[in-house]
Length: 186
Image (cartoon, rainbow, N blue to C red; front, top):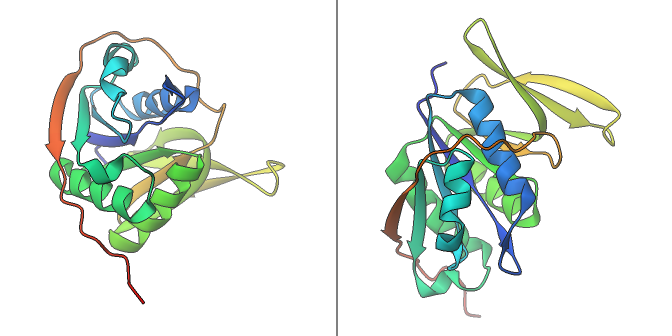
């Protein structure tokens, strides 16, 4: 399994980049140093973190343009994420184990040919295959998982990967998304 493009969700809270976002970037770098790391986030203040994301390996930062993304609604975020996913054509998708990350992972699993792997604490290559170690049963047991079909959609467990500064620059991509109103009026 050759990885060329990774799509990564990063998150902010109270105008700060969540530490787990850098951990997800570290997990992506563990997959391959040659991968293109494409980062997506829903905070309109994300550009202020561009240098920090670049220092941790991000190659492209997708800035989503649509007023409907200013407030968290899972349907809107899912539509936007899927549009970026279609444009990037990633070989693997990584999201943090947060409320938004898990919500999106479940929605993406229903809309794309992906294989969801949750609570990932380690990633390894062996004989050309990608294996994920996932925490199960209240973190008392670990399970080794290999993705058999589809794009791996990985939910990265908190405090499992150490953020590393690798340097670099990031290309900022303004990305206009089309959000359809999916709400039902009764």
